[in-house]
Amino acid sequence: MTKPIFTQIYDQTFRQNFLWVRASTSKQFLDLLETKVPNIRSITDEEDSEADGESLTLEIDGTKVICLWFNIRNHETIAHEVLHAVFQTMRSRNITLSEDSEETFCYLLSFLYGKILETLANERKLARKSIDNNPKK
Image (cartoon, rainbow, N blue to C red; front, top):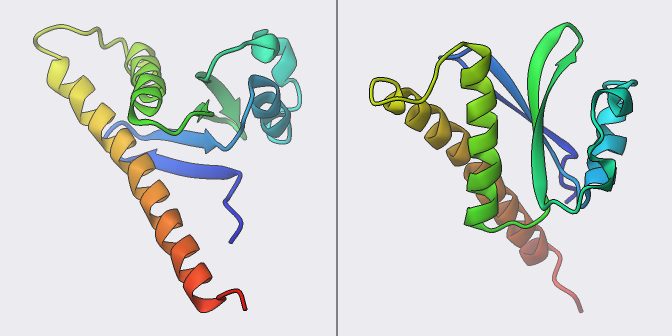
């Protein structure tokens, strides 16, 4: 089974598109995004980043999309990058973090984090099923 390079996630509440890009490095992230946004390198200077992930807000085919990647698949790194995506979403809607808005932030964080974990779990199940159906002799 081949993992998808791009996983699209859409939140209906905020009408926000997210694009999870499967990349190992910041350079690979930008190379993959360049297939969708040809001038990506003029938008960001993150190519030499040593980061374990990042998120960017881009316009793809006329739609604002928050793109994110992470190369370490642990809960801490995923949550860290998802929270950046949440902040970008809220900032674009002029929602600041406060006692009155914290539930709004928590909703989007749990939605996006949950979708990523669900996707990873489904991929693991498919990979196990593939191994079970094709045992080595």
